[in-house]
Image 1 (cartoon, rainbow, N blue to C red):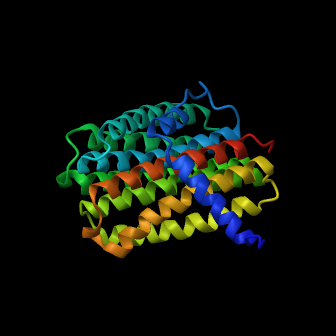
Image 2 (cartoon, one colour; image 1 turned 120 degrees about the vertical axis):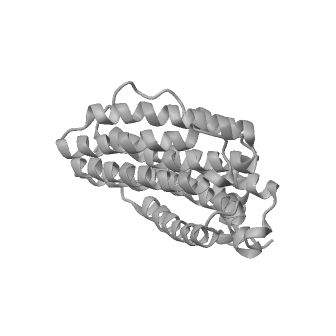
Image 3 (cartoon, rainbow, N blue to C red; image 1 turned 90 degrees about the vertical axis):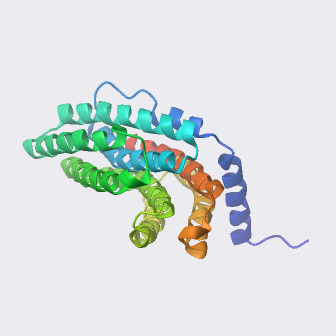
Length: 282
């Protein structure tokens, strides 16, 4: 009997893993990402993790807002939006309080001001096409400052594992950014820009996955979690590729819903990877 090649075995594993995890509900991701956080930042790795999570939340809130504008996954999207807003505010307070130097404190002061404006765009009215451009502009400002804070916390750490926590945490953000732009393109809002941003994020995500997999600090548990994330990526990427094949008018409400759910499942996997890296001794 001929044995399947290692490559075929790995692809079969990924498809099975993705199918099994794809059955997970959005509620499972909500429980993971919205779990009660420590009242304080524990250490610099924890700070990098939480700062990176702020980047992700900026994109996740935008994705949820756009899902509500599409009127898909409405109960889940509303819960994602409300819980993400609460978690963003809680972590913002923690990161401001922990800031180890004036430069970082200044960044989080700026982020606080940008957040006040963005929160108004998120919660100030019923999500709809008319407000999408303003929401995306506000979310870009919040993302830029959240990323700046994450990089500054990584610099304060000055250790290789701090960089890996940042890279893993950025994967969470990219999962949500790709989904956000997919939903934006389908409204449609700046469809050509959205397609370009998806392509850029996709390239970054694939490259960073290899960095995380090949890092000397990657232990067996991290590599196993990354393999499970690969299974999620197979399904999420397939959904994204359908947009490129079908164009802006090629997606149905069902496909938009599939992207929403697939991005939640991929986020769940990458949040676990980030936590595992953050738990490593610096």
